[in-house]
Length: 205
Image (cartoon, rainbow, N blue to C red):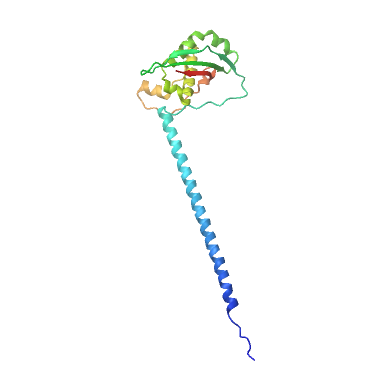
């Protein structure tokens, strides 16, 4: 009677399983490496982009082309508001007759400054009208143009009250003939009771 002889089939059957495990391990390591490289690349890209944006912002602030920033409000300070009568003024556009109708309120850092504003209202209105009359419609239609206008109004109101703003770098460079060195500019509220200009109506036609 013939007896069964042992074969190598069971051992051979285990080899594909080991090969598959080894293949999965290699693929897993490769995937981790790819993700790591991608994450590292994204990190360096974002870091480089942030540095470029910061450099561009610094250059824009140095030459005065940066969009003005909106100052943060201190909620602990009790503000007072003075509403001004509507301004209607012809704009500086040369290709067409354009005018602006603007209504605004001044935010003051002290209620005691309300009467001071009212006492100098004729001068304040004159200064604001002069600022508006030198604007073009395209400037005032943009958000940045309105923010810039509000900053200019704050300065002109301060001048009407006899509070001259500190000299900026661009003004210093113009008078001395030297390049601006990027010195920090004093905030308007540091020398004026006006901390904000708020528009309630803004029509351009």
